[in-house]
Length: 185
Image (cartoon, rainbow, N blue to C red; front, top):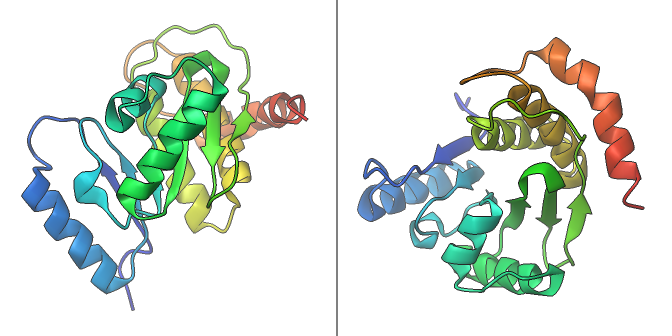
């Protein structure tokens, strides 16, 4: 019986996840059949085989080499990232503009977020990737996971300093996150 049902790798670009180490981890996770969600900083090369990669907009631009000036550029950047990781899904976070999800070979789907007063964005990306991974492992579709992640990140940015989002806080904000996502349609 596996101890884990998935893995989240947060690469802060500080040297802990060196290319060699990350490549070795990815090989072990593939062999164990564990899906990997990655929040990359400087490279996606070691994360080939990841189920999902979640850069922010600035990182997506740097990692793909595509200057992102609009939705078409974002789609090109996501496509390039998808090829580099071997076909996984891409979620690009865009701060107050929510995120755009690229599932399989599909077009990008914008997932707006709840407009909130922001006190501190520290930890929002970490919260987003954790909520995405947990939601997906619990059986959510990527769009559902993105809405939940938007709610969780919305809780965190509404607090000062490094903060967490409790289940109750996410549940409280979730109806507004769902409404924001439905407005895109």
